[in-house]
Amino acid sequence: MRAEETDVPRLPRGVKLKYDQVRERHVLLAPERAFDIDETAAAVLELVDGQRTCGQIVDELALRFDEKREVIADDVRDMIGDLIARRVIER
Image (tube, rainbow, N blue to C red; front, side, top):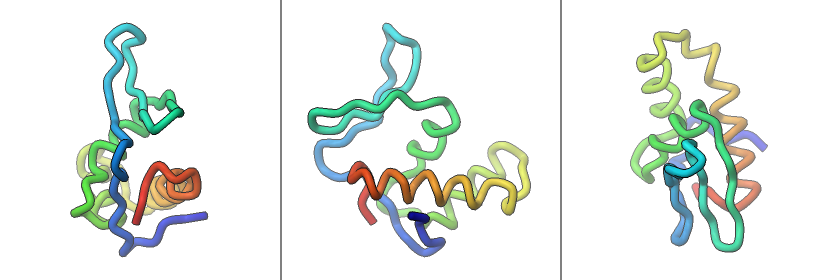
């Protein structure tokens, strides 16, 4: 599943992005589940606020990391789509 450019993803109630001080890494916490995520995924999830579209998230990341939009767009949309399928992001 791939998220669309116009989707507005958000974390549903009970799902939180946290920085685990002990492990020194980000964790996506959901009811009865936890996902260890890398820094790239954390950068994407920090922008998932229920306000920005997937396209706006891609634009922001392209600016932040000085990368061409087309290089990261598919990966970001795939990641968000995967998390929608796992029910830890809503659109």
